[in-house]
Every structure is written in C-alpha cells, then in structure tokens.
Image (cartoon, rainbow, N blue to C red; front, top):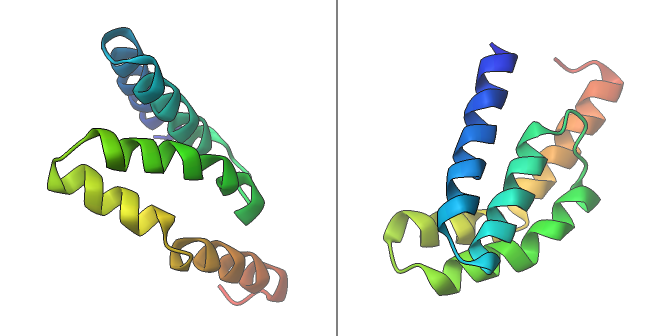
Length: 92
C-alpha cells in the first residue's frame, strides 16, 4: 500500500512540475517530499511555509486556499509533536 501511495504522490508531483510555473512546481516538490518522508518532525515542516504562502497567493480556488491556511496554522504541527510524545510514552 505504501509503495502505491508513494507512486501516486510522485506521479502527481511530476505532472504538476511539467505543467506549472516554477514557484508552484517548487511548492509541489517540497510538499511531495514531506509526504514521502518517513520521519517528519515539526522543524522539518518549516520548509513548507514559503510554499504554502505561494500556493495561497497563486490560486483562488477555495480548496487550495483552505488547505494552505490549515497547514499554515500551528495546530497541525502541534499534533505531530503530541503524536511523537505519545509514542515515547506508549499511549497508542
């Protein structure tokens, strides 16, 4: 399952890179790299800030803008930190 989902992310990023402007292609590449990384920490997600702002400014569709805003909010990254602490304490 992981292999096929990874291929899906790679194919989506490849299609975007071939058709989009450089700033959008860079954003897609950075977002795709975070999706394919096995160990992601909150500091790793800091590279997404510029990409998410670019996507928010470039597109006017509500889906892209809402996803960009949600990913720019700190709550998404607090959940990553909470998951990491819980894993250390064997919560799940």
